[in-house]
Length: 329
Image (cartoon, rainbow, N blue to C red):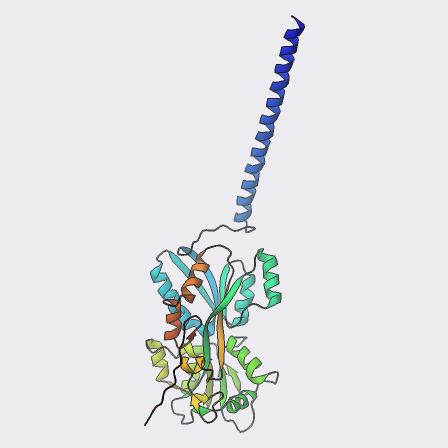
């Protein structure tokens, strides 16, 4: 063999070894990518990462809702599911405080309550989820005052209502609230009416809003405070049956002394009715899933917002024009 032949084979062996090293490197990279893929899939199945099995119009999700809004949210879900045959929203009605705690549960995709996220809550959830949940106003609800059908006194000032929840002597009524724990109505009474003062011993907690209606319908010495969506829908036969048992009282107009108003949309929009609270959604979703689809439905002016309107709530997205008018008798 000539030196030239050895030189040729040497170069050939060197190129072959280099080629083998490249192939081995590509093979190892491929194995690493495959391993990462398996790890991600297993991790998702073990609950350490998301598996998205729903879309804007399909799938199954769980949501938690303040019990005060059961009638209107039941209506919203019924219509949404009728328009999206492959969608299923499983709702859990609870006191507001429990709904907010459910934000820490992986199984709960959305909550509907009467306040948005506080800064500290948003930071905590962002750390846990690696994204910040979104929230916004759906509608405005009024707290209605209800009395027994036999009661003639159906006009109350805010001083009257504050006096009753404080248990001041001279007020003969028991006051019924919609829950034994921290519902949104209880929070409104504590924060907006009592403002740090103790609740009177005459304040009684029913198991639910329906329990408030039932108790007031049987007792002439009781006044109930409930969300207007329980008795405001004129097209709901159940709510009409409630109104055969109780009356909706009027409350002194805010900013117009001597006038008493009902908790209807006009009086909410014009800031005439004094006991109003917003209704919020809080959504834990950073992709276009069923939670986003239901939220889009709720804020759509021609869909969910109309359902809020029929339930006596003031829609949060619809325009509400107030026109001056004169009535002659």
